[in-house]
Length: 100
Image 1 (cartoon, rainbow, N blue to C red):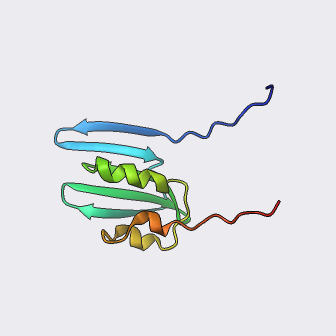
Image 2: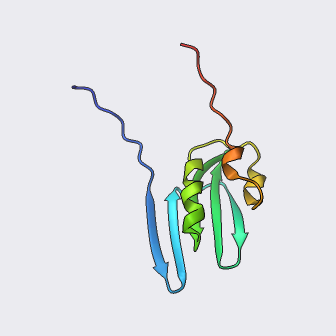
């Protein structure tokens, strides 16, 4: 008690615009955007220095649930985020564990 925990929440919002269900998780202002999927249903990964800063989903709520796990993570090969046959979770670079 007496010690404050820092809160590091991730912003999220959504909107329905006619036939589009748009959801944003994290920041949508990266330095590079990578689109996964096309047509009426897709994700856009917003990257900053090979880290996922946020994800925008258009008619892809199910895919967004999984993509949320990437926010804040470093990605080994960001270009592979666009490949539908590649599991995006497998692209996360493990954080180094510091010796105590």
